[in-house]
Image (cartoon, one colour):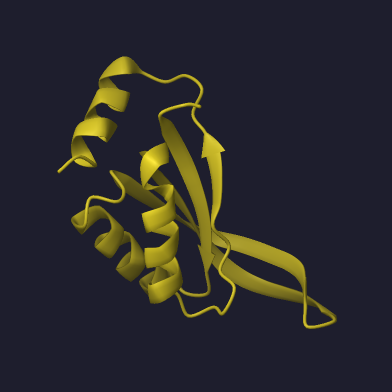
Length: 106
């Protein structure tokens, strides 16, 4: 299993995403979180198709921290079922991945 992952999380508002990102980084559950504006999400919820503006967080962390990161997102998020999806980082710049590891280590 790859050591590093990217976690995707959507939020309704940029400030909500920023608050979650600050907590994750300050608690060393993530090295970095990018917030991307202008996401339009079309999805099925409670039997109806929804079409809503959102922001997307792109969070970089280590695989072993996913469970704790997911739990923290669920505690902080306004959605009852937040999107928390992890993608493996198969390759990356060695200095960047070293920084990622150091930034998420106690």
